[in-house]
Length: 95
Image (cartoon, rainbow, N blue to C red; front, side, top):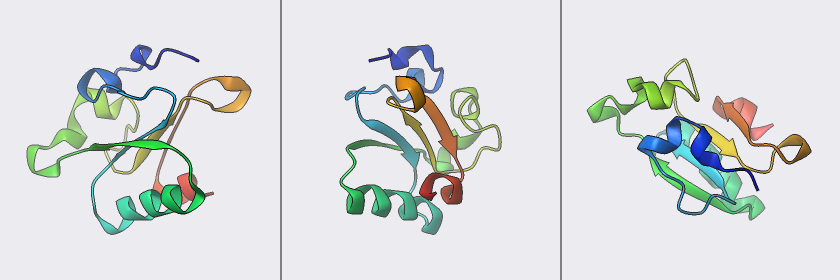
């Protein structure tokens, strides 16, 4: 398993369960879509709250995963060829 600590976002939101999909989101309509999908598919994930009230979506750590500064974003530690795979935008994640 790859060490997720190489990703800047994990400095702000450390992975307590690095073998799980890391979900960076907020309970908004788009944010909830991804968490519902993860729950329904039974994929193990670890949620991280990105607080808009504190402008956390504009922090360099978050922007390193999604340069658009929007939630949701995920970091899948078991992506293609077993390498971590970052992905953002709810539609792309759902596909």
